Image (cartoon, rainbow, N blue to C red; front, top):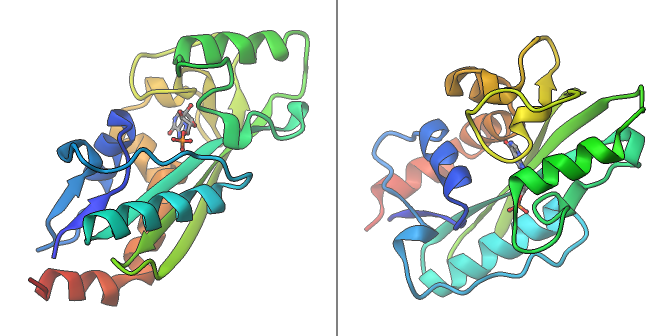
Length: 201
Ligand code: IMP
């Protein structure tokens, strides 16, 4: 049985494929399919959106599906942009515009604390679903630095580091990131389920 990574975000798909390696498990992404639905992320929690994406893609594909919903919570902005991180500066999604809007919103603000949060949901083809969650604390820098990663990476300095996520080698980001930690939990907590998928058709 294949596991479908329920995202069309190329950057997220790449990261998940780099991080999530279960021996014997064939992993495909929604980018490999042309006939899967676009799932509107209209819930007001990461958990709600992750569950919605995983269940919709699993039911439509007949495969087990794993979805990630993630975003940035900035304390001085009352937790924004949160679930609206992708479209903070409007449609279509524009990472540079999002970062510019964030810097303007934080102009003159001393408290730069923030965190990335990630919920990963795993659904069987019938829509039975479970989730894990992780976060990564850090600070918002005063101007963008680095060219690795995606999204808010050029502005986010994770706790314990002096460089932004976009300046760190991918393995260093994955070792401490919200997504890396959530996928590590998924690996540990769902080991039996994932192993059973390597035995199926
Ligand atoms: P969604 O989960 O598809 O709704 O999108 C999450 C949004 O949060 C992305 O478009 C990015 O703006 C931001 N985001 C999530 N994870 C990361 C990350 O690892 N680095 C930088 N930005 C991220």
